[in-house]
Length: 290
Ligand code: GLN
Image (tube, rainbow, N blue to C red; front, side):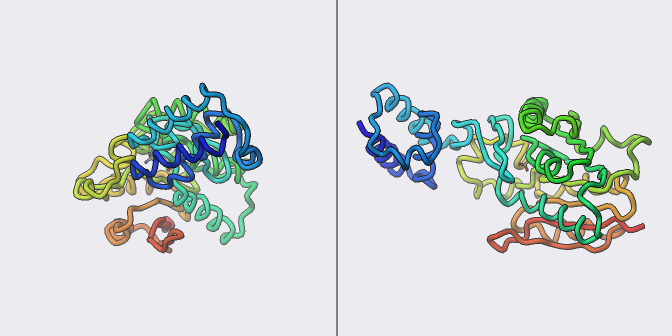
């Protein structure tokens, strides 16, 4: 069988099972089965595929047809141009979360500060570690503290930081929100606190697609009654950690702009809402007054 025919067979089965982005999944899984990159698939469509490899490929396709996200099958997801290991212990990094990185870089630029400054930054609920690792790459002198309540997630994040050469800049800590950093040594010393917290409320469960609901860790995407409680717990802790003039940068759910903004009232200024590429309010930033 030729590579092209295998791809066609994989695609057909994915489409029969209504898998979203079936073309992309068919290619990614074939790349994974063959340990090859995309250009190889495109340059050698007539390459013969041994039956054993074809069978292996179709096994991966069947796994995807159960609803398991492609990234948990291949073990990889790209974020900010970097390759991250992902396992079912972590949320799969989303492209819209890159707006958090952009927002931090914009705020630094706007203040006229150099990217070489030794910024002190905390990331709350780090999951795969995608946010602090991307920030460490952009801000080479920054010291980052990344927390997560899940030890399994932190193990993945630690491996990612090592593999991507940023382990020396990031301290990973197992704790709830920022509780482990609320000590005299840290209070009032942070330039930024960032977070993409779990924000899907119970009332929205019905809208959550199967891939997320069944396969991604509930602890990472939503566990809360309304979805905004986590911000209500988080912001007072952020206030304690930030320097005056320091900024909070958080991702929000598609309808969370007003409830989250209303939590950033007293003690905050320059509140801004940034839309994602689909025009949905996605990232909120605010500066601590002082
Ligand atoms: N910070 C990680 C991400 O943005 C994990 C977020 C989470 O688990 N809620 O992908």
